[in-house]
Amino acid sequence: MQLCRSGVFLALKTRSSSNIISKIMKIIGIDPGLTKTGVGVIEVKNNTISFVASETIHSSPSDPLSIRLQHYYQELTRIIKIFQPDEAAIEETFVNQNPVSSLKLGHARGALILSLGLSNLSVYEYSATAVKKAVTGVGRAEKSQIQAMIKILLPKANFKTEDEADALAVAICHNNNRNSFGLIK
Image: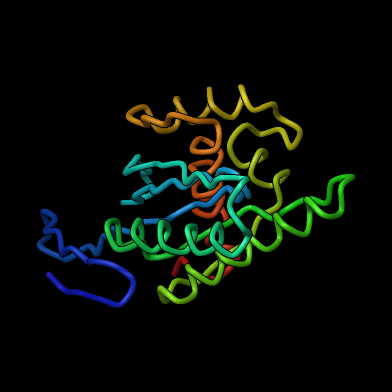
């Protein structure tokens, strides 16, 4: 078995006794939010995806923003240490009608991206439309459609919130787009 920076390589013997290299990779997906953030981890092996874990990180609206951001950093760092993903993907934020809410959500997203970067992960960003299209085939899919497709694509997925399902969708979206970034050779 050979180790490399971004994962584990396994050498498999074929009948002709030539080696085929099969890479096992973990991708962490993030659905950012200020009150709750979804985190999902998938494993990719031979173009097959499987569920690893999902979690929702909660923060209290009554806490100061700095405490909430610190909480997101600590929790995401804990999850990264446990599951040791190779790459990270995060959903882009949309600007809603309340500019203060958009700004605070941007702070949370920034803290999450910083946490991923400080953990030496490459971070890739996807729009909500791209994530929905990657999972359902429709860029304007409803939350229920995303959850139904996650259950089909990841039958062992045990997500507890729609945020976790969305985070798993972000990870799947990244896996589907890895070739466009030149990450698959």
